[in-house]
Amino acid sequence: MEKTKIILVDDHEMVRLGLKSFFNMQPDIEVIGEADNGKDGVEMALDLRPDVVVMDLVMPEMDGVEATLAILKKWKAAKILVLTSYLDNEKIYPVIEAGAKGYMLKTSSAAEILNSIRKVAQGQVAIETEVDKKIKYHDQHPDLHDDLTARERDVLALLAKGYDNQTIADELFISLKTVKTHVSNILAKLNVEDRTQAVVYAFQHNLVSQDDQ
Image (cartoon, rainbow, N blue to C red; front, side, top):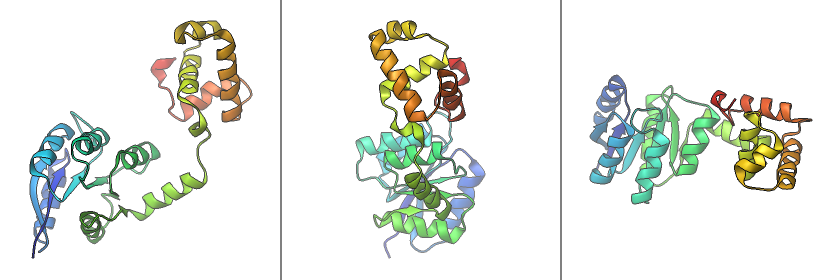
């Protein structure tokens, strides 16, 4: 039987040890490499070309989203399965959009994780049930700010800094009239009544950081 070769990219040694021990007990799985950060994970993936890259998300040097993008940029056929503890939208969507074939939680059962690796190796998509529910809910109930254009997000970030329209116009090298149009569009799309509410919305949805104040 030809084994599915995988590498583990996770900054927690005990997680890697546990996964490696379990996977190497399987007759059809072989762990051929380990990396404790995203940067090394990218280099290892491109060097060893495993059947599946099992990728954590929060790591030093380079996070899982950046690592996924870096691998797929140079190796489009790479099959990446995210295995993480995070179930929030800010983690799920970027890595799925980056091209990961699967997203599983570390709380998933060993059998579920094993099955997901086999599916991804075969070119199928493997999404943990709770993650799939969040994706479907989000698709049916998109966030209001999803409709903001890149320029409107720029204007919103400057609103969060307390800039007036003229200062925003100067900062972005656009006319005052254009700024007013952008602000009006932002209020309408976010369904808020004024600039203050727009800024509050932006902070509540992590569209800007506290440093922007």
